[in-house]
Length: 103
Length: 166
Image 1 (spheres, helix red, strand yellow):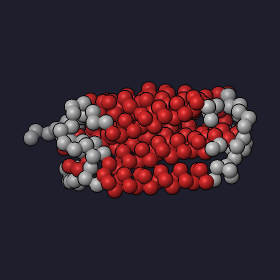
Image 2 (cartoon, one colour):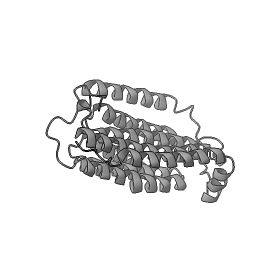
Image 3 (cartoon, helix red, strand yellow):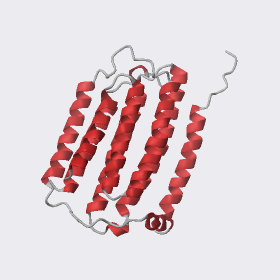
């Protein structure tokens, strides 16, 4: 297996774990953790392609990864703020119990 | 691939698995921090020093702390009494396994066609800074705007609203 393929397989594994967590857990915070794992796996792909692809001096993959990290941080802040707000309102973080749109 | 790569990859995957499977939410947050650290080490092993240290600063320093704050503010540190997986967990697991099978098959099948530059690229922080304020200055400004609005939005959403007399 070439180095790039090895990194891609690791990233695919982390992505699948994050997807499984986001799809199967009941707690909203764990779903956000799963989404963070998926974003991190995508970042690993971007950096791996930057390292082994042609023209690394253009820094394209690296820039994608840095902007992706910044957007993921904003997503985590807003997502966790929403979870806290919903908890204050409905007294639960269980997604199966969040079944009302009306406050 | 060196044994160090396999060790770090195993650490990353084990951290992710523990984060998804453990029952106690605080343990999950610690496990996902281990996974973030493993990913930072993988970035460093890819000669992306800047991305690796940004990963440590942003994910271990900020996102993990935010997750712990959210867990403590929602009393997630108490052990959940009921089932921790949703009723449709078999469908979710099947979808995740299918996605992994597809991605892994694509990566291994196309291994020979993938680019394989061996020389380590020289990306100093100076180069990255030049690129950020040169070619990528518009995305940088947009990200600055996004982070500002996200911070204000998160504060407003999570702010304790003054309840009128019940």
